[in-house]
Length: 442
Image (tube, rainbow, N blue to C red; front, side):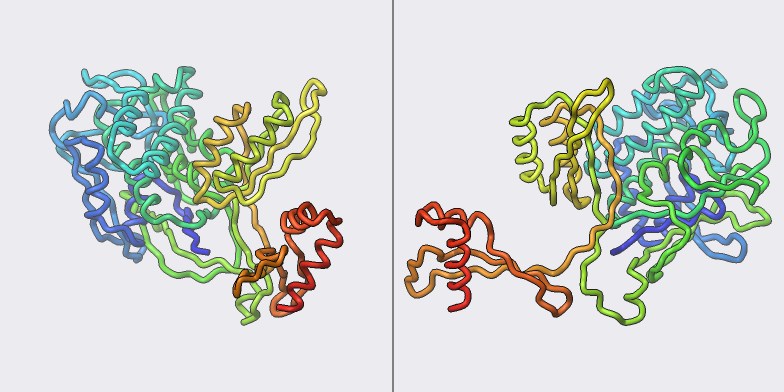
């Protein structure tokens, strides 16, 4: 399993993420070409080799043009809860003092998340990149809305920084869509320390939006005297990380470093790496007798669908690519009887299954959990129809389960037994005996 791991020992920001992913594997020209599909002008994305703490990495620099009217929607700042210092025609400092102001500065107008969303949705980006970028931006807008007591769609981004934020966030989404990791993990996240200047005055690190975005994550403070994790960086992690972990058995395959703008006493770096995660016993040369997979478990509690409707839902979920679908009875609020619909899926089928749950069931929301499935090797054997064989059990199949090289058990498929029993007017047991004899003679 190929895992993308974020090591946020010095925090994370949008530009550090872009730098690290380019340093790891992404072609800068490919990223610029994809970003060009947004249809926005007035920006340039540069990647520079630099060092922090003696470690070489890549520094991503967004250079903004000297026009103030790139597009009506290109106006805004990186999110947080304070103000950026923007100067047209100069590189934007992705330092860690981001707070968001909802009032115009210097005569410039604001633009809303609703406007930015329209730009992303109307672009020719891949659906995977669009979906990820919209999810990251939505998380930021919702966090800002809670901080400022407004609707998410109306959250305003101050003029120049909206374009900067779009490049950072959409760029990160493009990189993740191009890399297509099987799984994304992350270390404990350093938030930093000290105070940050916001539109509301001086506030302690982390900024209010970052507090909301990092809820549920393992975090720490005090490793640096400045703000180290920005709202954009926190939103990227909240959107893409499958598991926060500090230990595990893996092979390190490749490493990249994203350089932060500030030069500090500590190494202002984001490290990302490709890892191959395996069970510990596999490193001792032992061939495991089972297969291990990371899958997604989707669960919805439903109390207003009939048995027939649930049966049809199960059929459609399997047609959409579910590996398994089960129903479990439960008691819901107000003591109403309900059903837990559980769907097991690989990541490649998630979008279709999500659409099926929303469109074919009455649920308005469901849970997703990363689970690990261990399974034994199975082989299927079928009785052929060669040489004009017209035996009634021709085409019947048998599945055999193995623990390593050891054959554990075999089973005749139920539908094959049932079909023979119907055709011959015999019991299931007799049909199974006949089919087994057929395999014995094979």
